[in-house]
Length: 313
Image (cartoon, rainbow, N blue to C red; front, side):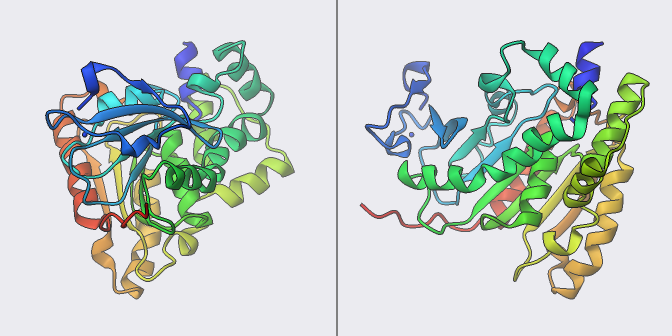
């Protein structure tokens, strides 16, 4: 199945008149006001990143930036519909991954399949997963211009599957200040994604020295000390489906076990949590416990997100 091959990579106050507004550079996106306590949704480009900004009637918390995966939900709109997080009084920014959605190559999924067959590491994982994290500083600068975040303000991150790998890599790189993060059925780095690819395609990946360097740089377990850096370290919730056949739950338990002593040493054990969810498969939107999943994610952000910064002007 074509989806299986691609998914093997591990792969934002009312919605005014029930429309999504195409945002120009004339008016900052987060100046949009709600109607009837329903969130407004504004389509923007933040730096080079296409995004949907979901703006609630009340904003008390720092913004949450969310990444989708390669499989459903596989774009920013689908993720927004699956995980609106309206319980959290924060601006939600649904970011498109490079080479997916609006930035899909002209040849579509055929080009992604060709790239992963040629070199999954350098032609897909690096530009998509690591590339998404590398876009964050420009995204933050654009959100400041759109008056969605105060200068120097902190954010929350969410990522599913490949987007979860982007979250972990962003935490390790620490190019933007992050209060809190949630991953869902996340790849923990290139090695985990290669293993998923091999399971999905029944093939084998030929490792190169360049790929090995990317694996070391992207591996969340290897970079646990970087992820747990900070005072306090970011509040990190790792959610993984017990029935995830694409990304086995063992990769999340291994990462949690590696991070635990680092969080204890920082006197922040309560800021790290692992939830291995029974009955939860990789494509979590197809399971019967979606409401419970949404509630647990919202509760984590509600608990650990800092207060929204005061915007000038």
